[in-house]
View 1: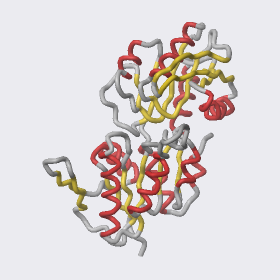
View 2: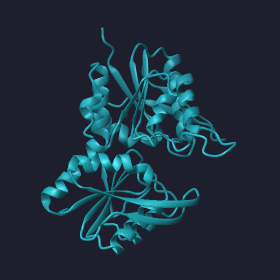
View 3: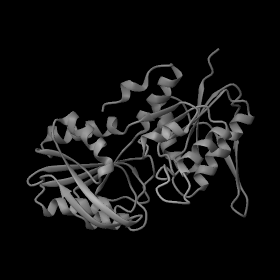
Length: 314
């Protein structure tokens, strides 16, 4: 008898998990959290998971409580005899620490991978990792999905409606050029690159634009927006250089600090993102496209032992 998959949510990803369960065609499982006065917490499944394939929906954005919650849920499922334990992590936190870029710093992404394995994860589903090589930090299968399957149809709808006429794809930095070229190849359009220099994290020292944007409709692509400093500065520079419109597509809306104010005060036409991380507040300039169907389809394919490559548009 093939066990039915069970989908559970960490507290910070409750809304997304409900959408995933609905898209999959099942109900979200019940898990309760006991909380102590000092902030310690303990998850408890309120239904049996013995022999089940357990999917745990949790984006591990700060605070670290979200990661700890996921680790405890994995350990709890393992001790309750679940046959497979699969974290569904639309946003894989700590991924920017993927290498030693200076002396005496950790490789946080590798540490998180090992903690997930040690806790008892048997597979990981995630979306748009900050660096593809993070998959190699795991000794278990990693299903790395791409938000392009969500973004491409939306951009195509803009082209079909005439809102976007002369499309150019942009990258906010040299590191994101591969992603930008993939979109540009699909749409058959040009690419522009922003060359930036930083003095420290989240602070841009200077930025230069490589390519022509005059009279163009720009769509800037990136994996995340944290303080939105790079994104908004790039959009403002492109408008100053004569761009007709500037949109940005980011998979993960971290949007910390004054990010919302920067977006609303910038010349950006629209920020298109997913619900991998819940927005702290609504904004007229932010368009959210749900990744729930993508995650639900991935779960179905895993259960059917089917190839996930059909979900890769780019």
